[in-house]
Amino acid sequence: MTVIDLAQVHAWLADFAAVVHENADLLTDLDRQIGDADHGANMDRGMQAVAALSADDFADAPALLKKAGMTLVSTVGGASGPLYGTFFLRLAAALPAEGADPVAFGLALRAGLDGVLARGKASVGDKTMVDALSPAVDAYEATVSDEAAEALEAAARAAAEGRDATIPLVARKGRASYLGDRSAGHQDPGATSVTMLVEAAARTLG
Ligand code: ADP
Ligand code: MG
Image 1: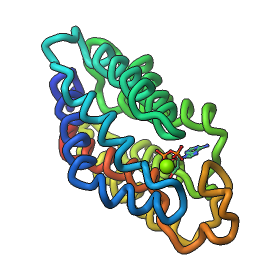
Image 2: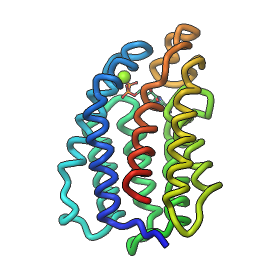
Image 3: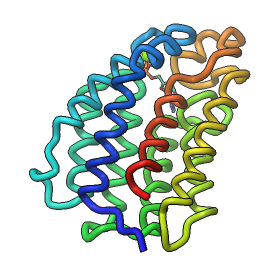
């Protein structure tokens, strides 16, 4: 049985930080189309601060994730900082300190998503990060077994499909909604970064 613990969560955050750094220009370009061209810079600043956290300074995975969430709230700014911060804080609160089995990890992912929904009030189809995160959590729950790998891979595929499905949508939440119909034809930046987060989980937590 997979057990997701401090070392794995630290590797997940480091992997995501590296991918965000490599793709900061892409995320900012997507945000230039339908926003204010800061999503890549925002996420890169926040995740570099998270990547600087040492696993040695934390007793367990929830403690690291709590600090990561607070770091994102205080360094990312914009809409996405509080939303990513809430996701990690809820994940931290739901994870057992002794390490999570795959089912417990799924419950924590669901709690993280619920936090994002409560904070941002977006639904699937509003062209936000929820369009990638919500199907990812559904796919994880539908696939989970004693091992996390298969469920994480299903979650990553579902996130990517949800991200791609944002392209034709008209934004109904966040800055992109100010554009009205002109937001259609562009991929949502937050759904793009969330897909990177779930893909990083599939590489590191399985
Ligand atoms: P800002 O829009 O403040 O500049 P960012 O550019 O960092 O913040 O993040 C933009 C992303 O935040 C969007 O692409 C979208 O995915 C996400 N987002 C914005 N508002 C919401 C919301 N209410 N609920 C969920 N996600 C949202
Ligand atoms: Mg922006």
